[in-house]
Length: 98
Image 1 (cartoon, rainbow, N blue to C red):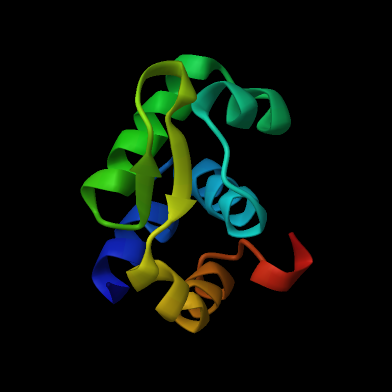
Image 2 (cartoon, rainbow, N blue to C red):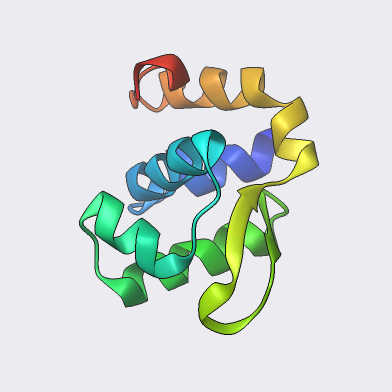
């Protein structure tokens, strides 16, 4: 999980947006359109980041189509301290500040 988080939020250009997505999903599940609106990002950009996060078991989904909602995975919920540590190292702040 540590390596995946570093690559996803600390080691790539889109890391800040992926971190922002995780912070929103920590507080409430949303669909891609809601995330795009909340974060003021293009829908296709959100879809790209969601695909990467899901591929690495950071998020999980329920539903399908437009109603598909995204949640932090159980594994990510159990490793929030690791997310906080990685975010600090990547100069993205503390998860409690988002």
